[in-house]
Image (cartoon, rainbow, N blue to C red):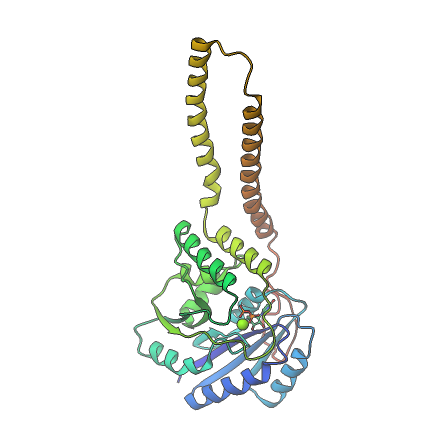
Length: 315
Ligand code: UDP
Ligand code: MG
């Protein structure tokens, strides 16, 4: 029988932690396979860690990895993957938005051997603010147009993967992580499982609009070079246009002998071009900032506390 590693990033999840633990354990036990529940405490400031310690005392399947501070969900997922021992591994949100009830079906599909991973996607976004959904749809449209990597709209990070795929993901050791892109980039045969959106069981979302916006920009910069070429294209088009305008001006001067006029339009153009240049430099700056961070080679996470000995504490 295969061993299952379930990874749950937790950031201030005291309200849902026990619900998640009970429901997931119940389902996995019923499946009759060996498993481990890896909880990654991402620098919570509530009772999450003490709850985890209690769970670990009473259940040998529970492993907790407690970060030295909040590193973000991406780092928490990476820590989970780096320390997962199972033949199959999956990341699950602690708030029950990734239904554990899908697990038996996911394992069954992998067991048949035709696929290497079973990914999940929400077919709707009920319960989410409409404006957030609208921006999310636009983001997926845009990123799929300008990136070679397939990034599916509504895809969750909840996906059960075979060992080979997990190892590939661990190998992708970039500091700026965008898992939806990484999962797509490594490839493998993926089965897509659709389900209707489930609202958070309790507690509150850790994302606000600004955070999501930054996450979206990060996703684009990490998986597309198109913004970098925007400046070149803008420059080429402007050169061509200005060449024709120059010819036009010379002809006008020769025909009408037009003296000084049109300073307003000149100023407008100068400001416009100045703006475009700054915008382009800004885009380059975004990429350079990423390079800067990558070259520092800082660890993705630092584990301050855990209940296991053979844990990769800094990676
Ligand atoms: N999370 C985390 N670190 C963070 C933010 C979130 O580990 O800095 C975890 C959180 O505990 C939850 C999952 O990531 O298990 C998804 O977060 P949330 O439910 O707030 O996001 P949403 O479902 O609203 O997109
Ligand atoms: Mg959630």
